[in-house]
View (cartoon, rainbow, N blue to C red):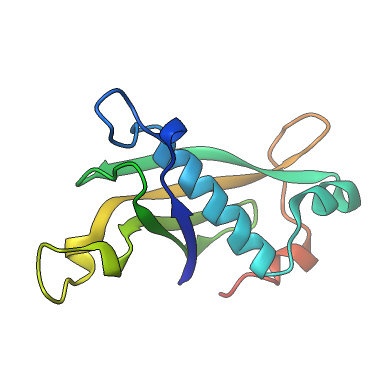
Length: 143
């Protein structure tokens, strides 16, 4: 499972001082982008070299607890399904362990703030129509 640290800033919160719900999608996007980088996939270079790009085609999000200003989060990305033209990625936003005070040894359930699955599809950058991923790209993802 890939993990990416994120801190909550003023711009991420609403008037109540908690993370605005749509900002979890931004956090997930950043984690997915860094996950791709960790696999050696730089999206701009990929577009330039192949003429294709990934786009989000479906999301399903479940909110469990709020994150607040200055919280440190760990945002995960793990591949659930690989298709020839799309990927499904499970993602979670967790409160960083050192910050939790609800229990002496909090488990993942105590830290889980938000979770979801994101489907990203491969499209031709020129016309945004779905197409099959190049074999060289497809081979980079664990089966």
